[in-house]
Image (cartoon, rainbow, N blue to C red; front, side, top):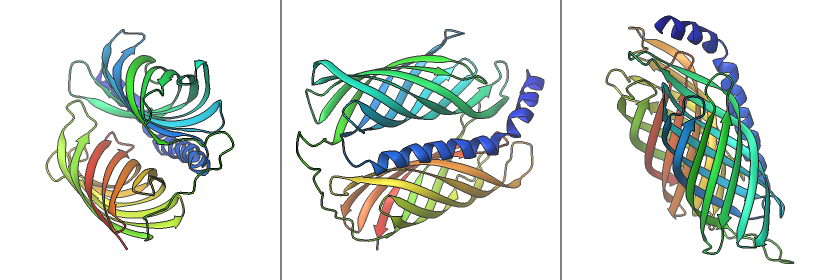
Length: 342
């Protein structure tokens, strides 16, 4: 098993950077389309259920967070983070941008939809009889179906089924139940879109964050993480951020460095709430590189964020970073902290 892992790692590591660029490019392109389309309903769901490896019949818990936006009466876009839990010898999650066809044939409060798109996955493959593992990255496809009840709006209820197909990993089926919130309702017939007021008065932001980092390994070791970030708005939906990130300082997690990211971020409720996705390079020094030494490396980061503004100049920002490496040292970094805008 160990030899097989080494062979596969050599194959995958050679293409990791190219795949990482492809994954970030697709995610950014789809999310930019979402942001550019200002009409139509916008909604967010948090869902939980089960996922099953269709070949090995291994069941696990599954959860996801999904943002969706109508483009026309029957067409919509969404982008989701899907965590498929712990399948036999695999811990896999990913980002799924999708296009949807929607209809409400029986009741306008009950909508049915079918969606499809690429699945940008991160898979930790572990040996069944040891602590050996490797981090695989790649591109698959996801097909989904939903039924959504709008009768309790702005609260939404949804059942969802996903089928995920991946050549270099396993295929899976999942079913979940979700609770959602209508972030912005679409205008009524003949009504123009309403222009919201914005409490956002500044283009610069500084934040200090604390949290946890989790190594994507067989044991999921944790470390204490911290970060300082400067963020600058370039365009209404486009921001540039530079950050110093420390993922921890105790074995096996001991990595720190500088991160530069482009963010696509959109505000709701007069800009009190903002949601965004970002990505970029991460130049880091790893004290424990997994081979008994240390290294300075150029990794990538794919990130999600949510910001709530208490005032025009003070807010709380939650961050999720997926650090993507080509030497099986991927981490998940969960952080939160206060931000000051000026």
